[in-house]
Image (cartoon, rainbow, N blue to C red; front, side, top):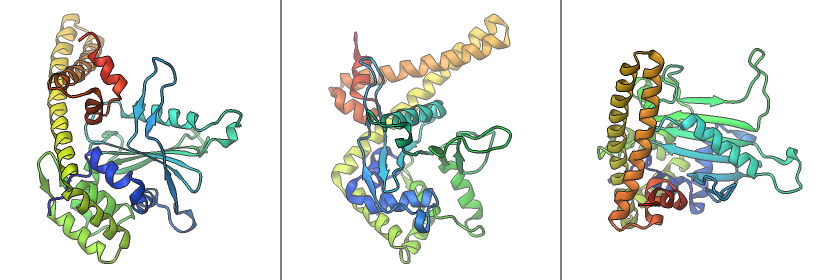
Length: 322
């Protein structure tokens, strides 16, 4: 059986963001949030994943999975395999938009729901600060560490660090409830087209005794053999490879330009600013060129948006004056 990579956002949304698979979504969230007993999520409502514009010229964003729980919490789950170096700011932006949009006209601030962001990455977000694969953030007072409000909660899950732990300690350490789900996300490397047979074997053994894991594996298999899903998956995989190639090229160009400017100024500040600006402009230009290349091949703005995680408005903006 050739499973498709669940780290691809298309497949991730299919398995964890579809109303027909609500039981899988709830099991997944309970595991990641370590919810047990009376704290378990027992129902969710799937919400519109496209954040509307705040102004006529405002920015729109498309989320991966967004649910409202029976406990009145809004939970957004995002998966990202390419490091675009803006994730901390992006998570804050998404949280702020979700939190503020929860308040209806005439309601008091007390009606605002707790809003939880779960970010699943395939790279370390804070490589110099921690080697843990699951970190949790709140707003706390600096010295006495008391909580400002429970309404903000960020979870960052690093699959690359999880795999380090899995390979080193899988026979020794006690596993938390999230392990089987992170194993599913880590089992297939779509870019290399290889699967970790040891992980799949362990998952199959778990499925014999755990109904939630068995149900998820069965749905994953069904999604993986669907011809339409496989076509969409291949298109998304091709786009991801192109994006990685473009980003690497633009980073090299940005690095060279930054070094050149820094050396010309002969100052450390010039080097740092040149590197930062060169990489930023290079990545922006790379995305613009990628969108235009896709348009040249006859793809519509909607098709480009689906493959790039941009909105149609952002695609049209990049194609403006072209």
